[in-house]
Structures are given as structure tokens and as C-alpha cells.
Length: 80
Image (cartoon, rainbow, N blue to C red):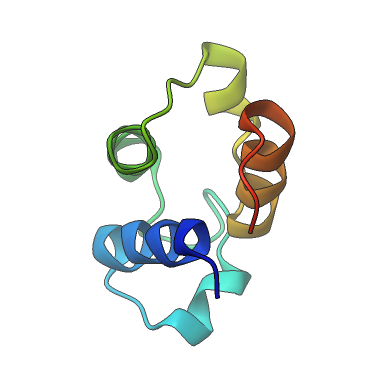
């Protein structure tokens, strides 16, 4: 597992209090705890931990755990 994936997973686990096995199923507003406030906390933590800066379009496009990895790869060149 890459360092980027470890960091990404750690941010999700800390934000939502879930095990690593549960992460791939997470979707914004489908998982009850991933509401708008948690979304902002997640985005902020990812920016800090991965040393990136999301634009507004990125924040709105970030809709699931898997989609987030794709977005981070395409937008910031991060490899998972």
C-alpha cells in the first residue's frame, strides 16, 4: 500500500471512525455521517495531510471514497 493511500485512508478513518474495510463503500450523503459538515472536515484534513489545495469544483466533485482517489490522481497527480 502506498504512502498516499495510507494517508488518504487514515483521513477517512479519523473523520468517520470506520475500519479500512468499510471505506470503499462510502458515498457523500448516502452514508449518514458524511453530511456537509463532515465533508468540509474531510476536505480540510485531506488538504493538510496531502499538502494540496482543492478548488470549489473539486470539493463539489468529491462524492465518494473511490471517486476521491480518481479526482486526486487526475487533478494532483497522486498515485494510489
